[in-house]
Image 1: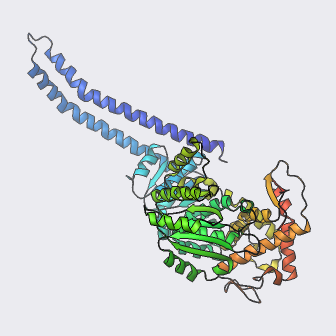
Image 2 (image 1 turned 135 degrees about the horizontal axis):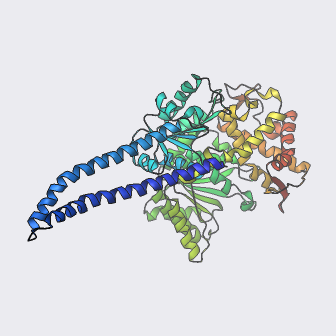
Length: 573
């Protein structure tokens, strides 16, 4: 939560912006009076005392006065602009001495969402933008936000923005190579100074390229350095995690295997596909079932299986060629025919264009209602038009119809400080890793036992997926977690412990296999070899006991975060 000081500063920023706009309005009124009223009054005064009033003389005098007044008005305008620019410069100079503020590199759509959300939370923000006259830079200045003009790759620009005293630097210029370049230049800037920081600098780098992001995430070496924690983030991965938390509910499956339907298999659809497999939402012993509609179905299938050849071991995936983003009746006929008798978990529309996603989601919802699957939720990805999606959903409610349409993946949600800066999504993952460090054997490997801030990204991801799948494992064991103050005492039965341990090992087995790890008699980080990469029945006794021990400690771990376990009416798997 933001401090009172930061909230007060944000309020001052807004007040300063309002004051500036009011003073600007008064200035324009004054100029209007000078240009229009003064010459007329001057001319009228000269006409006094004359025997007859001459309009010609009146306007002649007015024109003479305008010749004098216009330069004066121009000078006043120049002074006003100079004072405005000086005000902006002073704000930037002051920002250099700030502490515990947020620096945002890049004021595109993503950068603006970071800035606006951070300001709402009461964070102090300094933005770096190359174009001084860019629309977002201009609007940010008018809102009282400090904007430093220049190339963020330049060390003087970064220094001027006060990165040495910042708590967080968010790099989102829209170019992956430039984002990483800025991050590594930060290392040069910080390592060249003797800094006394209370905590490490958090550097968050946006990566849009799937391959580059996956490569860095799967890296088994730490990405940061002693004074800074470097973390890459991807909007597709964040959107998928948030959505899967809603979808991954085996209680809704009613003990039957249900298919996840994806419309579109671009970057977003691909991320959802992989997370659905990793989360292992099916009943124990079954494979995930995923149906994908895409206009380039064959090419998508070949590309995915070429990169992840082990997928068929864990999931049954069916690619169907259909273009649902445009008005093509024959495509919808194929959808109705294919989904008519299918039992479905959810439908997710993740086309790259918001208009196409909205059209396809409405079309899919109507077809499912016609086929008698009105209870199946349909999620549509709307990056920039989330309010439009909510309006469409609200129309159904106002007509008295139950709506199963939902939106996800908006930039406003994805760049919320809770998701990218304050790491609220990682709360459970950090707790799980801390327990692992405290109780696991040191022979498992030194890197896996590092503190969270120093942990390689590959192992952070593993802890995140462990935490994200926790509701699924609990439901299979006939359990659920609920907020409680204070949490009650709870003891797991031996069957519940065995189920939780077995399911977590299976999740880990899928995750490691998809990441390219293979079974070998001895562990090797470089070759991605692990002797524990076997089925539960073949797992050594000591490894099983470690899994059971971790499962047994789950009630205590959850209680530390304000949750307690409860048994449901469903028995353990």
